[in-house]
Length: 115
Image 1 (tube, rainbow, N blue to C red):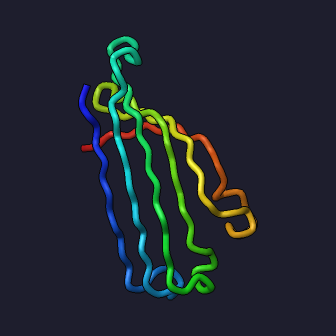
Image 2 (cartoon, rainbow, N blue to C red):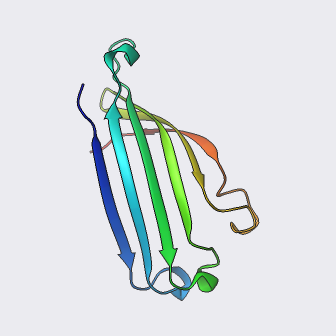
C-alpha cells in the first residue's frame, strides 16, 4: 500500500465566459490507497477527493456567484480502466444555479481510460 498523494492546481483565465473578466479556479485533490482489508478479488480501491473554488471578477456577467465544489469517493482500477463512484456537491443554491438543481448534490458513477 502506498502513501497516496495530494496535488493542487491553479487555473487562470484573463477573459472568462460572457466577458466576466479575470477568473481563477483553485483545486486541491487527494488519492489514498485503502488498506489490504478493503481489497476484494484482488481489486485495490483508492479513496479520492477534491475541493475546488471558482472566483470570477464580474459575477453579474457570469450570472453565478463565486462557489466551492467538492467530491469524495472510491476509484478501482480494473484492466486499465478506472471505475469511480463519487458523491459531489457545490455551495450553490438552486436559485444561484439558474433556478435549477444542476449544481446540487449527486452520486456519480464513471468509467474512464487514459491513453
